[in-house]
Image (cartoon, rainbow, N blue to C red; front, top):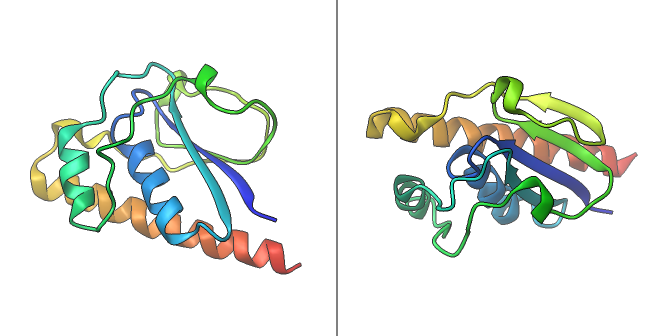
Length: 135
């Protein structure tokens, strides 16, 4: 059974969108991925869209979602991106804070580093979820 995973950041325009994109592409057989923001921006960051295209992931059809826009219920994983006090407290079996800086004001190189770090962490999460499913 797929693990329900929610990625949350403040605006749901960069970090959580990229995490959802990676999870859907790389872990679709293991993870049912969603993302949301505690204060959604209304638009996915143009640079996030552009830099994710470099990884063959299209965020161009995504839009930021609020916490009321996601399915209700308990999550297997609630992954926060480092939003501090703005992070929600939702019912989850496991809570993890990845404590990643918001890349929206970073240089292109640093934005890509943040993207690549998210990709690595999503891959590790997929492995963890796969091992749990094997038990």
